[in-house]
Each structure stands twice: as C-alpha cells, then as structure tokens.
Length: 424
Image (tube, rainbow, N blue to C red):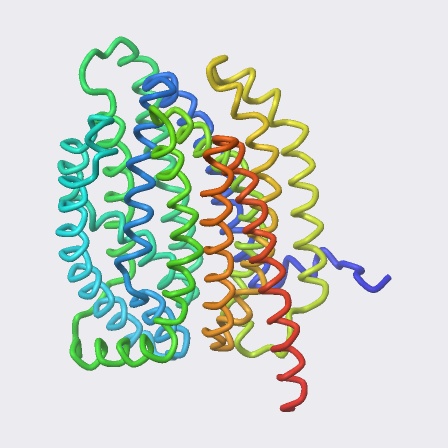
C-alpha cells in the first residue's frame, strides 16, 4: 500500500500538530458562525442581511486593492528571516505601511460613497461613510494572514480566525435573548459587534507578538525590495482573482433591485468555505517546510485530497436539512447555491495547496499569471451569467474560475518540480 499511514508517527510530527490546531480552530468556528448567521439573518431579514453582505463585499474588495502587495512582501521578508528580534521589526515596519495604506483607502472609498449611484439608491452611502474610520481593522486581516503564517505563529493565526467568532457568537446569543424586538438601526448593531470582535482579538495578538519599530527605515527598505521582486507579482495576480471574487457580490447587487441575492450568495459561500479550508490549512502549516522540499510529499497530497472529498460529500448530504431546520423559509434558495459553491470551494482549495509550494520557492510570476487567468475567467463569466441566471449564474461562474485556478497551479507545480529535480 503506497499511502499507508502510521497515526502515531503523524501525531508526533510538529506540522501535523500545527495543522490540527489551525484546522481545529477553523472547524470549531463553524458551529459558532452557523449560530451567529442564524441569529443575524433572523435579526436583519433577507434584505438587511444582504445589505450587511454588500458592505462587507465592498471592504473585502478594498483590502485586496489597497495593500498593493506590501503584505506579501512582509510575508517574504519574514519567511527568509531567522532572527526573532528582526522578525518583530518586520511586523512593525509592515504595520506602518498598513496605516499609510489606510489613509489612501479612506480617501478613495469616501469618493466612491459620494459618486456611486447603486450605494445611494439602496440608501447605504451615509452608513458606509460612517464605517470608513474603522477601515484599518479590515486591513489587519490580510496583515495577520500573511505575517503570522510566514513566521509560523500558527497558534496566533488560529486565534485571529477563531476568537472573533467566539465574540460574535456571544453577542448573537445576547441579541437572541434580549434584543429580538429592537426597533433601532439593526444594521448598525451588527456592524458594531462585527468590528469590535476583530479589534479586541487583533489587539490581543499584537500584545503577544511584541512588535518593534527599531531600525524602521531599514526594515521598510527591505520590505520594498521584496515588494519589487515578489510582492508586486502576487498582488497583481491577487487583484484579479481575489478581487474578482469580492466583486461577485457587488455585481449581484448592481444587477438586482435589492441586496437579497447578495446575502444568499454570501451565506452559501460561508457554509461551503470548509471545502477550501482543508487544503488551505494543510498548505499553511507546511508553508515554511515547502521552502526546503523538492516536491510536496505524496502522502500529504493524498490525505488532503481524501479529506476534501469526504467533506464535500458531507456538505451535499447535510446542506439541505441544515438550511431547512435553522433558517427561515425565505432562505431556501440558498440550498442549491451551497451545492454549487461547495464544488467551487473544493477546487479553489486545491489550487491554494499547490500555490503555497510555488510561493515558498519564490515563484511569484506563475502564481500571478494563474490568479490573473482565474480573475478574468470569473469576471467574464459573472458578467455573462449573472444577468441571465441571477445568483445561480454567480455560483456557476465560481466553479469555472476555480477549475482554471486549480489546474493552473497544478500545472506550474509540476513544471517547478521537474526544474528542481533537474537542478539537483
């Protein structure tokens, strides 16, 4: 049996333990997120939840555009670094870049709020402007995702992904029992909870890291150097792929009289997200090890694929009963969307798995090119399918784009593996 697995040997492996921690944190957050989404959808209703999802899509799109690849550059600097004191300085230098980016982002988003007719037509421009001062909290999400996994601080990364869910779950519990009849601005209540949850946990992680601003100019210069050789390539690719993903919700809004469909699509993606989490978590925990390996271990790839297929089968079996039991009848259209989104997420996770190996070896250009191909595929198919098939068209477009992404990453991984073997 070529893929015989020794459970004891696996558990004694540090990376296996880290993968277990990170995936456990992500997995444990699923029931919390489920309960939270149930309360939020009932509290806001289909249209209100759609408004929440639409604004969230705008900020998601913004934190893809405005970092300009500097977080990827900080990631590369930390990956190559071997000194703990220097690592804290890279955290500080990248944080300075974050606040400079936040100023630019705020100005641009304010101009958008005044000029966009769709935001005005749906009565959300004033509320969106009120959220802009908190925009730096959104930028901390890609900051931590890039910096912590490059520094192999898996427990801290797990905290940024899990603990905000605990906070929002607790707040949802309070809303469920004490604020069901609240007559004020319900959207403002949800956004206050959402932002506060991330802020508290992010500040806690900063305290643990003990970032330093020593040698600030030197560290910022090093990050700029990595930005030119590496970060900008990933940024361009990420702008097309992740940008197109975030743009999907915005396009649904533009082709619809209200934001109900945006909420349906966001909920379907949230329920199916674990399909991408499995290969993503494995690749993240092995990221630093990939830099020293000539190829991805066959057993690791086999187990990851098997777990993903099992999870996809479970999603197909449980999605329908779950939505029917826990959500109101108004959300029944989410069920077929979950089935489609699950396929797209599984393919996307497979692409991430191979992408991490390429990134660990500094292959920024092919990763960029595949992201561009995926983004263009998603954008074109969204524009063709959403006007014709509404939210279902967006889900189909997601599958097609994810297939392009997974196949592209696998192809370039094979090429990289052959090249590494030839250079031995």
